[in-house]
Amino acid sequence: MNRPVPRIQIVPSGQRPTRGPSRLWWGILLVLWLVSLAAVWLIASRMAAPRLAQTQAQLAAAQQQIAAQQRQVESLKQRQVNLAVSDQISRAANNEVQASLAERDEQIAALRADVAFYERLVGATAQRKGLNAHSVEFASETGGTWSYNVVLTQNLNRGAISEGQMRFSVEGVRGGKLTTVSWNELHQKADAPGQAYSFRYFQQLSGSVILPKDFTPQRVRISLSGDGAPVNQTFDWKSAGDGAGE
Image (cartoon, rainbow, N blue to C red):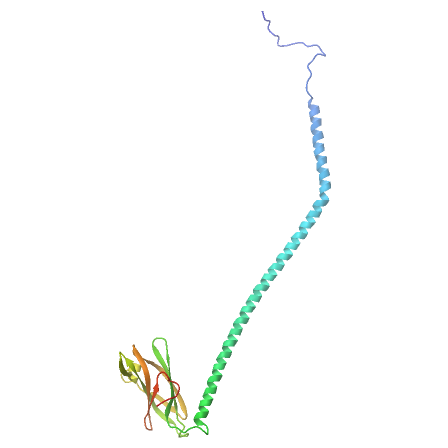
């Protein structure tokens, strides 16, 4: 028969079971571990401090160098922009000067031509000739119109003033037939007045006319009516402006 085990046992002194390390020993070990960590951190800090300061100095110097290089780059960029703008201004000014010189050359050439024409007209060796059309020039314009430039001259009577009206008609081909476009048709008016002139030696008359569609001009017939006998001259359209009047 089994006997029940008593809940309370009496053990003689000196025969108690051996226990693990006490809490005091665990506390001592923890303190020693913390002290070792602090010692390691202190030693590492003292050893790394000089290198850290040197590294921070190198970093500061590198940052200063980068900032200086950035300022230099910005300065170079601004200089490049200034040079580009200056070059653009110089080119524009040069183009303007070249255009102005070309325009002056054209004006000088025109003035020389006028002087030569005037010398031929009124010079001592100039051929004496009464009222006549010296030249006729036509040029196409936008919108289908034609500008004309007629130069009238006279040097037979140098003291007289020639006055009157100028008209012209254009002869050509239209629809396979010879056609003459009158002064009124050129101006699209039923009774277009002639163009007045009044000069001593020469005068330039200009204006614009309209040619019919599908019309091919061939000749221009100039009519001058004034205080003297009427003058009629014919110029070839293709060679208009060469002064070769018939």
